[in-house]
Image (tube, rainbow, N blue to C red; front, top):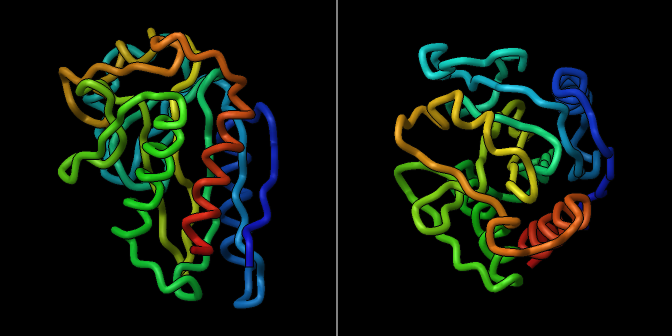
Length: 202
């Protein structure tokens, strides 16, 4: 069955995180999968393996310890967030195949704008000319996933300079706007969600 897609707009990080936890805890084997589309207010998030040493100078941006995988990243307006709340057991989908599916959804979306992107097995996410444009961080609980991906669209990239993005000291970031692509962030998130949903039902 197709996932239910919800457009949530601009949201603070922590309440949405708690909502994902509650949804995952309360869902049953009959609960529809959902894909949440949103933008976050400025925030740095540390994954379960995240180290504060990679947060160099947060200034006035809050730092939240999250339960997703991965290291530190930044979320802010102008970045498309797509959270995938999926029953992996029902979908017969493993963790690594899920990561690959999310990466491929971003790669496919970018290709629709004539941007060639690639994934790196050793560093999950999506890259254009070795600059990171999309990130992935997920959590699996009760055979279900939450959290998901972020794709940089048209945002202030300066906060990335104040962290070692994803734990890498020299990693640079980019966004669609750097390639003269002009698309609304909500529209971009919807396009990613369609590509995810198409992959799930194919």
